[in-house]
Length: 79
Image (cartoon, rainbow, N blue to C red):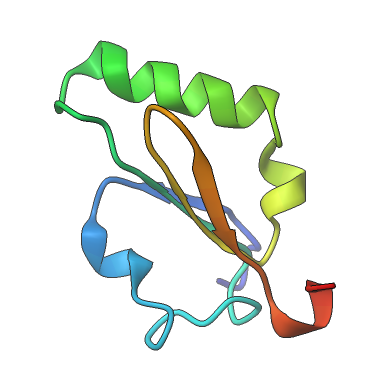
């Protein structure tokens, strides 16, 4: 957290916004591939990096699957 690094994981535990509330960290991206194949995981990550990109997810908790990225932003960033 001190270093301001964005965290990318497959671990469902990091999707708990009560434990990791948006804005309390530099950002968490949870990847949810249909299978744990390297190709599927890479495809989802590439889509997120292209749109919206990690800068747009700063401080948020985001969950990305093969179809969409759901984003929970810090309250001050929500409109």
